[in-house]
Length: 178
Image 1 (spheres, helix red, strand yellow):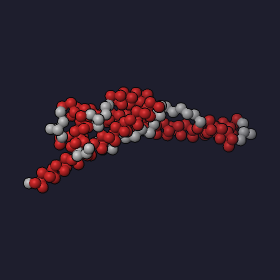
Image 2 (cartoon, helix red, strand yellow):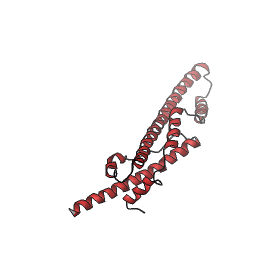
Image 3 (cartoon, one colour):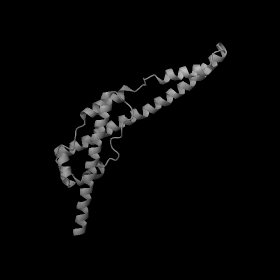
Image 4 (tube, helix red, strand yellow):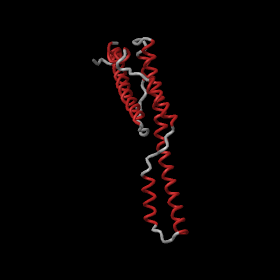
C-alpha cells in the first residue's frame, strides 16, 4: 500500500512539474509573439504549447485549486490555444505568400523574355533579368492578413501570467519547487 501511495504522490509531483514548465514556456512564447506583433515583425511566430498537458493532468489537482484558480489556468490554456492557432495561420500564410511571389517572378521573367525577343532583339536579356530580379527582391512589402494579427493582439492582451498568481504558487508547491 505504501508503495502504491508513494507512486501516486510522485506521479502528482511530476505532473505538477510538467504543467509548471509548460506554463512558463508558454508565458515566454506569448511574450515573444506579443513583442513581434508590436514591433511589426509578423512572421515566424513560435509555437505556444509544445504539448498541452492541462487536460491530461487537471483531474489530479481539482481539489488543490479553488474555482477561480482553475478558471485562470483553463483560460490561460484556452487563450494560448487561440494565439497559437492564429500564429500558425499567419506563419502558414507567410509561406503561401512566398510561394505566390516566386510563381509571379517566374511568370514575369517569362513574359520579359518573350517581350524582349519580339520587340527589341538588341536588348541584353541577362541585364534585363537582373534589373527585374533586383527590383522585385528589394520590395519590402509582403501581404499579411490583418485579421490574424488583430486576433493575436487581442488574445495576447487578454491572457494573463499564471506563474505569479496564487495558482502558480500552489502549482510550485505541488511540484515541490521553491
